[in-house]
Image 1 (cartoon, one colour):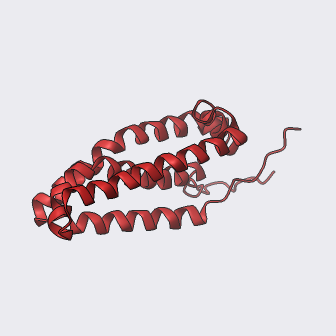
Image 2 (spheres, helix red, strand yellow):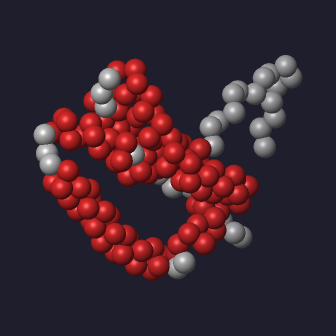
Length: 165
């Protein structure tokens, strides 16, 4: 075991990898839930922007909701095959992936973020609209956050496996 020399200071603590995953999940949840629940806030602006009828714009959202539900059925089946009862075993999956030391903090934060993102998306979009007079910046920020989340996910790697022996 290496011995530190007297007077040597330890380097800055490394950022725990799980917090990087939390940051990526935060961005994804912020955009997914924020965009879904902010549709009503954007409705009048989207009508003006695209010149569509209310029925056409509502049809697009209905198509999105149907697609979301259809993919949820398939992704639910995949989740059942991998971890069984998905959300109830999510903390256990986090513990398997990141270790028990950080599992409760990570799982709790992710569930809290998922619940709160439904409110923050419309609030942020409303703030932008009040300052800029339109939602264009909100849409560009939405696209940018989604791109950033994809980039973070591209760099995500599972931690090194630990031996139980």
